[in-house]
Image (cartoon, rainbow, N blue to C red; front, side, top):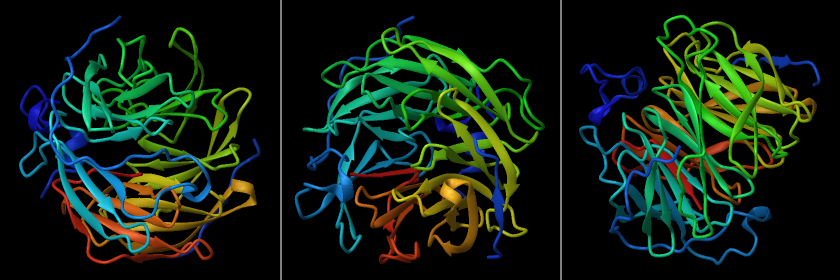
Amino acid sequence: MGSGGRASDGRWSRRRFVGAVTGAAAVVAVPAPATDPRSTPRPATGRAAPAASATGPEGAGRPPGPRPLYLGTYTSVEGGGTGIGLAAYDPVSGTVTGRGTLTGVADPSYLALHPDGRTLYAVDERQDGAVTAVRLDGHRVLGSRATGGAGPCHLSVHPGGRWLLSANYGSGSVAVHPIDGSGALGGRTDLVTHSSPLPGPGQQGPHAHQVVTSPDGGHVLAVDLGTDTVYTYRLDPRAGRLTEVCRARTRPGAGPRHLTFHPGGRYAYLANEVDDSVAVCAYDPPTGRLTVGEEQPTGSGAGRNHPAQFLVTADGRYAYLANRGHNSIARYAVGAGGARLRLLDTVPVAGDFPRQIAFSPDGRLLFAANQKSGTVSVFHLDRVSGSLSLAGEPFASPVAVCALPL
């Protein structure tokens, strides 16, 4: 993929083409269980907003008043943004107020926060992919590092805070970068390409879509849409290198996109983008082995739909799925300690193509970034019933593909 989301031959890449600007109940159970810097630091613009760690129950210790909200976009598409959007939200009403833009970051389509709450990381989703670090105090861009692959679309920080993991969609690979004491990134320590199994139906190659660490910190899991596989790795905490330990296959053509763990750590929920399904997966922490259960519905009915991202509440009682196409958020009840999902209903997202969803740190709000409508919808979440209610009119944000509330 190159600037504007086109492949090197001028065609739209499948990833950006899918998102280009333009309840019956079910229950399913599963069985128990080489360095290459990209740039030096660059100046930033935009008003600063206070930042704080997202640790602690219900956001304990947070000062009252507006909280920071960071917004990801594409800068190389028509109508896109010019960098990372800066905003604030009221944690009670859910009202969002714009506060400018942090420029100097190209195509920041996904954002992640360091565990200490002081540094933000963004992918640069371009053909020559990179990841960028931003110090939240003063919104200083600390610099970028090459991922060694094309179109990085997801990143996460290892729980220890020493390593940044990123997934290169275009080249089907996973990269590791060290994080120093200032939050800045060092040169890449590893790059693992998913060379097998062969691509699934309709796919031309591997497409790493997500890389996350298991809740116990013992394994790193990479979800690959192109090979219909979830790869499990061990991360060497000193060298920053990945060693594959096992694989889990979905049904051919499922196109797995996003995996979210239940807080109990023994189950996870997988969103399959291509065949519009979800699956409950059993997870064995000692071995890292994932067992994919039966596919079940997303609540989208017969229409064209591409499920995007799962969330699970901190108490493990409810799960939510962003449905792109059906333009809804599916609500599931979680049962049997995480082993079952029961589809309760779907709620209109009040926007077009919800690419990503996120909870506020206190769990009282849910944010949905709607790519095609260029809006962010905010919902109040009733933590007893799990129901969602829209918190006013959606906030306008160019090609909104990620919302990160702090």
